[in-house]
Image (cartoon, rainbow, N blue to C red; front, side, top):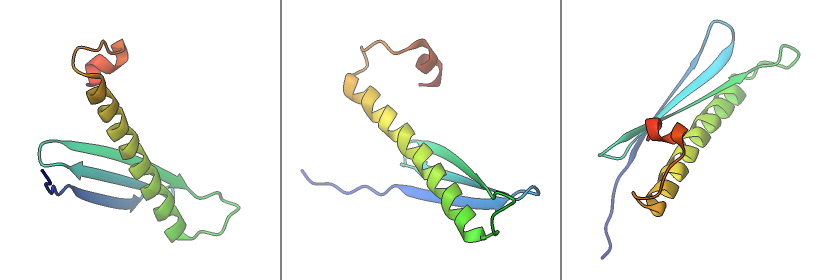
Length: 92
């Protein structure tokens, strides 16, 4: 049976006082929320182009979020009875 779901993503970008661009992305599935983070730093020898910092930081935050989703899916595929590594038990 076909169904449709809507997941909402909210992305915030900000620059700190040291010139680093930071991104914070939240995925709200309606039942849970996941957060991804990313940052970008301009090399002092490079021309400062804010859009590039935004793109890098946002891309890295979304990549962080994507990795979290893939790990959750992998865990769900394995099933609840599959032993997990100790470092994942506390986070899961």
